[in-house]
Image (cartoon, rainbow, N blue to C red; front, top):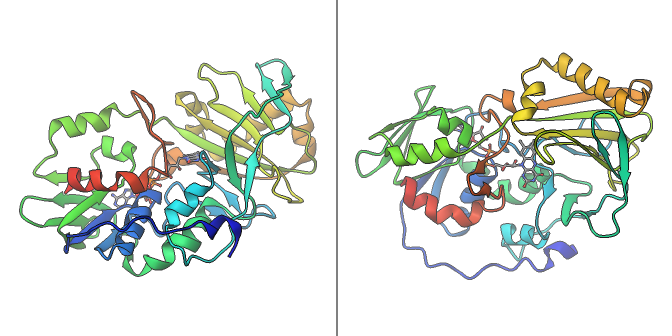
Length: 343
Ligand SMILES: Cc1cc2nc3c(=O)[nH]c(=O)nc-3n(C[C@H](O)[C@H](O)[C@H](O)COP(=O)(O)OP(=O)(O)OC[C@H]3O[C@@H](n4cnc5c(N)ncnc54)[C@H](O)[C@@H]3O)c2cc1C
């Protein structure tokens, strides 16, 4: 068994005295972890997804670079042991090799000058997958045991919890019935009230959704003939760290040279509102300015992932008034609260 999974001991058994069925709306990381946990504890569920596949903001492409590429979630902002905790199965088999993300060349672009900074300490305490992706993690370790209870292409638009049971109906007219419901639909959509509830949600609940800030977000991936850029380069804007170019192939052991733009904040609307062709032209113009025309000279191909244009996502991720809601990995631990709140 590979080292990362050696400590993958099952957490203390919970006493489960619930014998009903749970509907889980949305097969992103939160929905999948909810389903996986129910599967482990023998609780019946149905995982209902609007789109044609699982993952949500966990998405990959295998065809653009010579390594699997995360198009959304990319970093693990935590100790890799967290992955063991998510799997929570001593019999799990597989290989997860992580990169300790410590960029060595770090620059800043202030709009007219590129300045390099020397850091003599560990800048980031984060990790990335080396030869796999976040999507592979779910595909390999989480999805196999829940796949038979996943349903795709069923966007839920009404939920009736008037009586003992909960009924969720999709825009196709398909009806799903359970005893409890967990809704993991992105906050951007809950703010738009894409789901109609009977009885209506308490106004305080809708107010809480409305208080969540979900700014626009985009990633642009550009392949070049050579690496003329630093490992990471922040761009000065009105929001700290909202716009970053980074070496997407950093320590991947790949032949391809990949520069990725990560842009998440209200400022990102300057790109997310554009067509893909306009995004590309705008980004290349900035890169040519930063690197004296080397972007155009070395350009091979590009991919744009505009998260604001994804119909069942429509934004980046949630920021609450109290700061960024920790994404992804809290899914497992907020499960019980969601059950109580939504059920
Ligand atoms: C550009 C970008 C970069 C990021 N980078 C990182 C990172 O490096 N590390 C990190 O930890 N996090 C990162 N995140 C955040 C992370 O991706 C999200 O916090 C996390 O994936 C959210 O998971 P979720 O299950 O809550 O939502 P989602 O992944 O959005 O899943 C929700 C699911 O609900 C489905 N759905 C929507 N409406 C309906 C409906 N009506 N009926 C049924 N299903 C519906 C959607 O199709 C989707 O599959 C990033 C996000 C973005 C956008």
